Image (cartoon, rainbow, N blue to C red; front, side, top):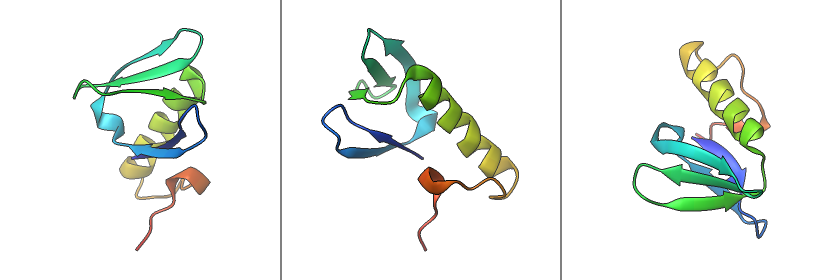
Length: 73
């Protein structure tokens, strides 16, 4: 799961495995395999970086946990 911010500044957490594609039109539009689309404040590159960091965290057992990847127990 990655944390993003909707265009109206409301936080959003999405399952990064469901991202189908990301458009920059010039707003960043994240399209999921479910058909849902979200316009977010982050750039496409920032979304990609968050997905990469999240997947690295999964592979390395949480070694690279940053503020947007905090696990709540």
